Image: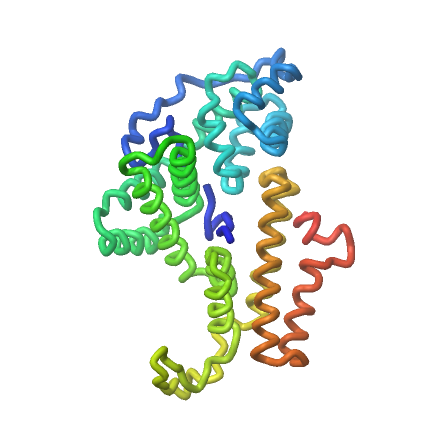
Length: 345
């Protein structure tokens, strides 16, 4: 189950020419000037567009997102830059990679969107590139964890940072899929993944407990571990803890029966996440298929939570009934105009 990518808990990357921060990001070529719109380029040539889409292996949703940005900008460079800044946090990492590699494409809408995106990222993400470069140069795990903590306390693990990190991670995976696994490739991917996980954990310390738990669950791939996490955070703490060897350790009286994450907080986190996904989908910032996949991931976690709550509180308990009632409008809205379908207005 993949982690979601939202602002503050996540997000997307650094401009590069197939050699991101792990090597020499400073060699990335800067745009050679201001790119202006030309009125004769407003009409997209259908066959040329189709050929370009095939060459870049753009999906239908990716192609529609590019055209939508172009049309919304209405040949206004400033507006296009603003639209890209707004869409970037939720833009699929693989689409950003493709756009960064398509600056020499002759088709004007795609070329201009690509070049403007590179300008935006060069200007806005330089600080984030430095943060990631510093983490990659840490050298050993203990020092790396220390640097991550410092960056979080300084407020540097923001949307721009996760944009840089996610896209470098995506690029590493793409290279490993396209090429035979060479020296350093596997370690680069695993190091970036470790940085991603640790940064997520550090950021979660400062977010509401319900959101932190949901992010933790979305990152966990093994169902048995997710069940243990749900029991630990959503259910009353036991009187004793039984170790693998059978030894029992009493729990402090002040901690007994304590619920670490109230059920209402978890329901609120699920609802706000689904609402955010649908809002970005309606704005064209997230592909429809990706949005459906993320909502389904939230639904799966909610189902697992329902089972755990029923087993621990009882199938007829008020806690379970309240939990189900809270999820009802999120996953089974009574109206097609529900914000959990249409997004926030």
